Length: 71
Image 1 (spheres, rainbow, N blue to C red):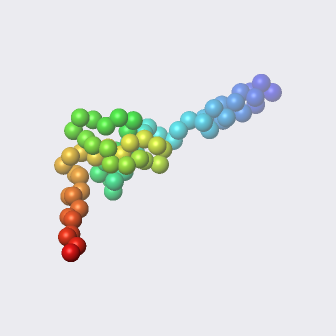
Image 2: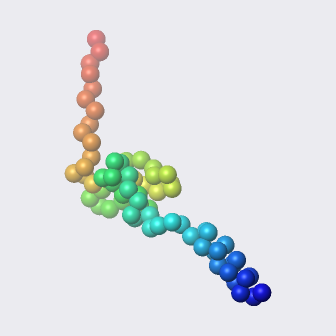
Image 3: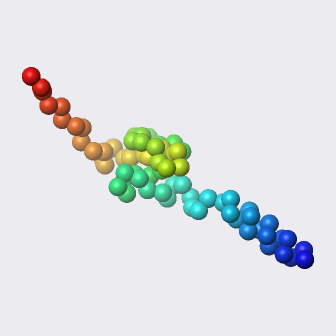
């Protein structure tokens, strides 16, 4: 009986563990990484689904949108 209780408790605990490390989660078409803090060579682009920052290296940043003049 004690083994069953231990087994049930183990399953309950494992159910609350996140499915992977957040530093391996990818964002921005696979070029960025979801992290708590961005590195010095990176910039924040948007929030990931788990509310961490999507950090993108300066070399992979999209070009700035060109502004068109409207007369």
